[in-house]
Image 1 (tube, rainbow, N blue to C red):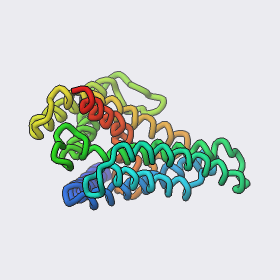
Image 2 (image 1 turned 90 degrees about the vertical axis):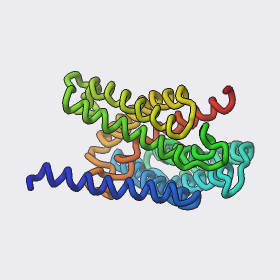
Image 3 (image 1 turned 120 degrees about the vertical axis):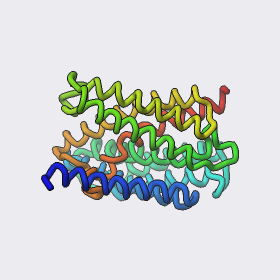
Image 4 (image 1 turned 120 degrees about the horizontal axis):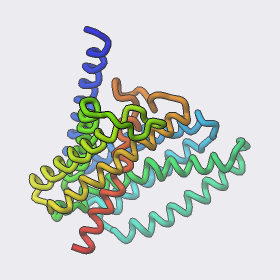
Length: 286
């Protein structure tokens, strides 16, 4: 077996394991889904802060990670039926949490005696906003989607994950077969405009299929397909930008053939706030 075939086998096997874990933890219960979200949040924040350190910053890694975990737990308390459903409380406590976090990080930086305090504070806060906030919103989606009238529907968030992954798969397949025009060669040399279009079409098709199977609004799911695809590509490019700035190929090595948590979930991290917003606007206006 040559090196290319071996790498493909490893990537496929680890991808299958990852899929089984995501499916199992999401479908089992609200509590196991919370554990999954917490695990991804902690892993991805750890990798982000490691990238920040490689660029010369000294983020408050422990403080930022604890804040991220608390934000996810706050979402669970506020939005999931297993713990109570208090939307107003979520936004109220979220605002108070944000203020406490900001001033806490500012005050802690006074006593750290590290160079570049502005960069340290910025990267600490960015870790929470870039990783933890989207993961907290991803935790809420099964309770607010248009097919969650009975409270909790794990298939709605799984469909969002499948849409994001479909965009990645179709973009890759289209890119290696038809890709001619580079999209953003400075950041990601392998991405092409042909792959970009193929990814969007794949995401839309997957979204419409999900909407049909779930009995949801097909127009809404079609829009989600477009928005998820666009934000997924942006998420991938943003993470590539971070890695180039840090001078590394992968954010981590916990997933053989895939890299780290950020490498695997970068697209989903950026897509989840926009999908969340789609469901919220649909609930308010339609």
